Image (cartoon, rainbow, N blue to C red):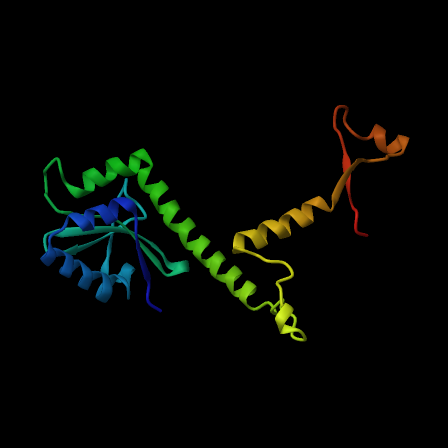
Length: 194
């Protein structure tokens, strides 16, 4: 199964700064190598960049992270290799990793993927619901419960569930109360719709 390739914000900015010939080589490397076997074509980086991989193409390096359980490759940086230079891609990337910016960007990529999957699943559930139109009298057909968005449906379900809960103090017998540490308040939850 092919790996999906996503970019962090810094990785995307790096790609946008490349010239046309390097972009074509990058596209070939991503489509032919990293999307098929990122662990096989990449080389793991050493400490302090553990869990990151590099792939060399032309005079540039791709630094990425692989999530095999999700078939996902997250491109973090694409820079030229300047050995011994202050602007070396590995030294610059290490500085960015130490600040936590890359971790936050990877987290944002993963959250966007989860949100997209959730919206797709919810949209399929909403679209598979039966229509709320009256089949007997089409001239007076109206929607019974209009849901403008998927989020409106979710909000409605959550508010219905939470509004049906009523909190009451727990009624305990004297022996039970003696076993409770002082200052601890207990409550029981009763549903109105029993």
